[in-house]
Length: 445
Image (tube, rainbow, N blue to C red; front, side):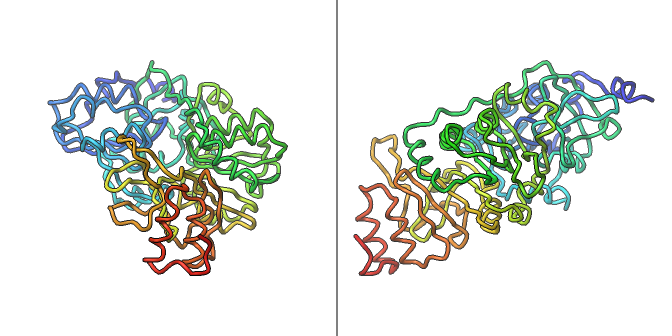
């Protein structure tokens, strides 16, 4: 039987395909741009017909129709490895549940049998002549999910680019149970427009950059602002080794700033594990031999990151305290995001010769009540989840500056951290530092 004969034999309609899901099943949607839009919609129609179906996903860009159709959780419950603004709406309502994880470790949960997968669904690129489906924009831990699943369903989308991978970047038709063809548009993402405060934070990071660095960027307004700053600068020959390739990196490629010529691993090639952005980014990535996808267990491995000199990691966070602890996941008990790859890259960049990691945030926020609140706290006590331990925090950045905490003792840290706090809160933070016995009399007020 040829691959195309096998394909036709396994081809079903979306409604037929989701009949594979039974009550009590764990259904895995993988993550990000691999989200199976067509199959999710078909499965949502089975509300009331099945019960206790647990859906697992990560980095949602589109809302799951199963959750929207069933807010009572009678048929479907959503579980997420890493929350986005989309997922946050569901966790706020108590109809979705976060799953703590380090991004690089997620494959191990599947390989070690720590999580169940009855049915796996993922969007892939069209099959090639040899029967292979590229995972395209979403290498991450997709093959780990599919290998752990009892039933594998592929959602084939013409809009998914074919992207060459270092490894574990495709699946063959012989290892697939069901194929569905989708006419939905591939998921795209418009980057948030940088605010003035994002630009100020980017300005404080930029002086620490130099020619030839290998760069990892997170997502959000600040990375977009920094990307624009780099694109207009004299910096050259940057490398890309990042968990997320976004529109910001696309702009750096277009500006000729990313060449990967000085990378110490995979010289000449940019590396990512997931990609999301505009359609133009996907067209740029399609069959581009200068860029590779790779599994998250490799891309986010601190040992791999540390082998590259002058590695610079830049990620956002929500808050910090005077000890240098970082929270990027919650505000008090409210779940906002996830650990993701932050700790992976903080650890890896510190191992790099000349490497630096930057955790960036706004120094304060204005609540719905119009009252300004400091994002730098004396200490955590309201249930905030610690993402980066104080012993691993390197550089922290706000619109008031960038300071390095590595190797600093408690009173040095408190002084440095307060120096980048919003001015309205500095005196109160000094008093708190004194009460917590982490302030010296000789420290400047």
